[in-house]
Length: 477
Image (cartoon, rainbow, N blue to C red; front, side, top):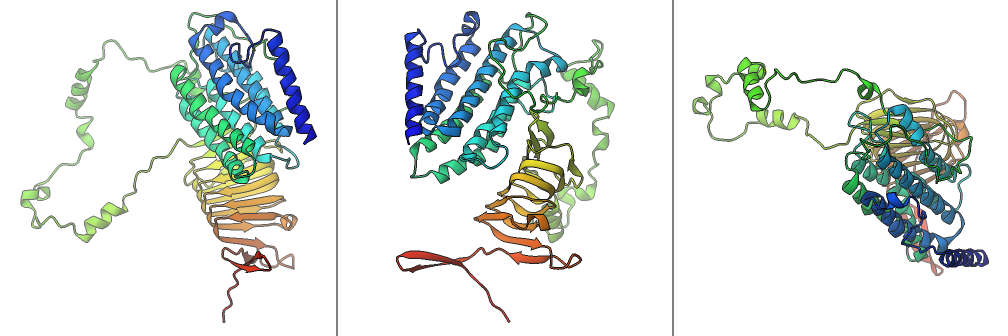
């Protein structure tokens, strides 16, 4: 209690000192004055307003909480200030090649690595706050978008997808502190508002197709000098550049001036027969007037042929990439049995989303693994430092070959969990889940695995002034 009071008093003193020196919170903004000419640009002033309104709100809530939540929030503030300086450089420079772009993004990458470092090692207090803040910063990578062939989603979609990853931990905060501490609830709600609608609407208004580089600006760009780099020097590598094949290709398709354009080209292609060559000819027996059965009733054969055709579902693009050097993202993989992550370390996390009928193998120790909205997905991993989390999944199989302190299963139907001898002390948490089976090694080295079904039904009995909860046991002949 005294520590929180001291932190609040120190924050108040800093605010008063800023006011006495002529700094006005909300006018020059959290990130300071910066370049006066750049502040006049509508996109830069709008981004400063975004920081003042949304980041300022998160800081206010974090100051009331204190501790590592305040530390993580200050890193988040630093990341947004770094991106503001990058946007100023964008307004002053021409579009950069891939090598220059990697160096350009290095300051932002260092801050994001700093945020991820807070979540590593032994599970700290307020872990969900730290993960929500660190994972959400992936949204700032929208500034690396360089075209439809760069391997990233469009900036607006990238911001939304990145928040979807962080929202898992944000929702945990809302559940944990419901009717307990309003400061934590305000922090989680303010974090979401920062990205949706805050950052998403900003990107939609000023950079919907990527950063708006200055075609008449200077040719080279340098890292922002006004934002000091405080990241650890032994952090991970800079973010990998997008695939360069289509971007660096010197043979783009060039339409000849002699070729027809517009509708004339369409009619010419139709007349050549190249378009209609693959169409089937309608024979006389296919015409309705010549059909013997004209009742309009669909027979069983036709019905089966129609229902057997696969339905078209809207899914996002498939992804298998390392984002910002810290997070492996595997998304929307279907029917892939050969997915392997073999170059990983204990500071990286793995997020698997929307995969179906696939198998992923993770060779090496990672910090955290999350399966989200996967179906018939198999995952084999060696070691995990923090936790393996399974959320909103159906019919998944997970095999631990090493150790895992915690396995969390939430809102999942059907999960086969295979544990090794080194992971028998794993803590397994389940919520709103069914058909959870855990297989452990037998007594003998060559023995078969022993299957244990985790209970999904419980009996609650009120006795001696409190409820006692026991799992339901089924006895059979």
